[in-house]
Amino acid sequence: MRQIVLDTETTGLSTSQGHRVIEIGCVELVNRRISGNHYHTFLNPDRDIDEGAERVHGISRDDLETAPRFSEVVDELLAFIRDAELVIHNAEFDVGFLEHELKLMKHAEPRITQHSTVLDTLAVARKMHPGQRNSLDALCKRYEVDASNRDLHGALIDAELLAKVYLAMTGGQTALSLDEESGSSRGSGFSRDKGAEASETRTDLNLVVIRATEEELAAHEALVQKISAS
Image (cartoon, rainbow, N blue to C red; front, top):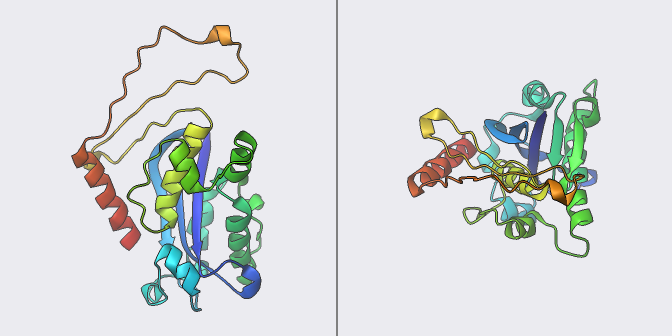
């Protein structure tokens, strides 16, 4: 099973006002494990960025002058997400912006569902936690996902956080598989079928959780910053 956790950053809140995508971040899950494979790009929107949006993500128009345009990366983006399930928080927003970009370039298949299926984690969270705050920040706190290094929103770092939240929220494996060159950190979890009877709960498991060292965490953060700056 292949899933792609996806997030975007934009010049503003509405495509009806001509706003554009300026960053796309994707994290691959294979059989509910973070594979270490990702897709990330900044984009030149050919327009100004709203002050409010810039305060959220910290990306200025000057930062994007040499970035590619959406039409230049669309083939590799669609190849990366093809036939996967997209896992997106507030999918209507991100899908709407991506489809707007596809329509602007008159793509032959402008609907995201022509390339992938979509799972909205905001809708899932609202069903699981009705009446509670279900922003990504709130879910990180609820599921004890460390977001302390996230000063500003960013498509790739938010996709990484959402991947961990999604796996925790749906009761499954949260193992990481990192580049051998930067070391690895693996954790394991067990979750029985939600439809199983309580009597089926395993009591004979002796699971060991190996936590990342400070050096490994620092190496991972340095890698994330290098990717974001590329």
